[in-house]
Image 1 (cartoon, rainbow, N blue to C red):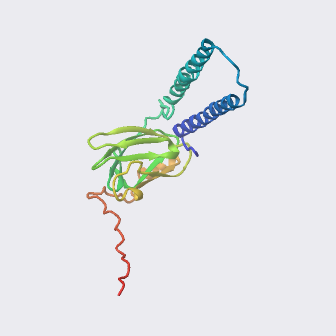
Image 2 (image 1 turned 120 degrees about the horizontal axis):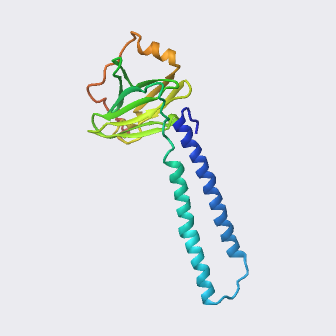
Image 3 (image 1 turned 90 degrees about the horizontal axis):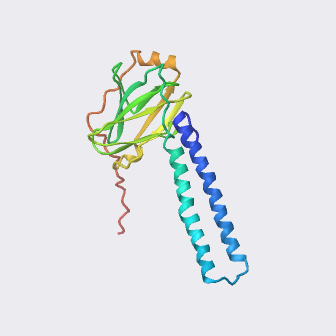
Length: 226
């Protein structure tokens, strides 16, 4: 609900429109229900009752859902897409999930990080998402991107942050005992600051070669009565 990029902003706007439209439909249905309960019963012949029932079935059971779904598809399919910028090519980043963390690599510079993704503000980033073991969910809520990392496949998604900041990216697919603690720190830096960071000689984190151990279970036991 606090978008920091164009994709998340489109998704948030779509959500608000869906909430408003759904609320209007709900109010109309409740009003009709109340009217049906409170109105005086009138005698109608069987043919008239059938015509009235047919109009309600076709109008409320066929036409209304068809129009609602058509509007949702018309506005929902384009939502979440990051607009392309012909002036600046996208930055390529590789993100690999494992139990229970994320490795990040910048192929152009050879920079590698563990558990952190750094992005430039205002520039599209093409992220290739993959995994070394089980299915993980790559999700940056405030940037509006969510995709599954599936073994044997690489899925490309596009990110763009419109403002600097740090965003939390939890794993969105249950992947084992360490799932609750598996997260990615996403930091958006101003363009010039990002370029200095990308080409600096700072420490580079090597990718994890073995899965991280699962959190230890509690071994506390109740005292034995004597």
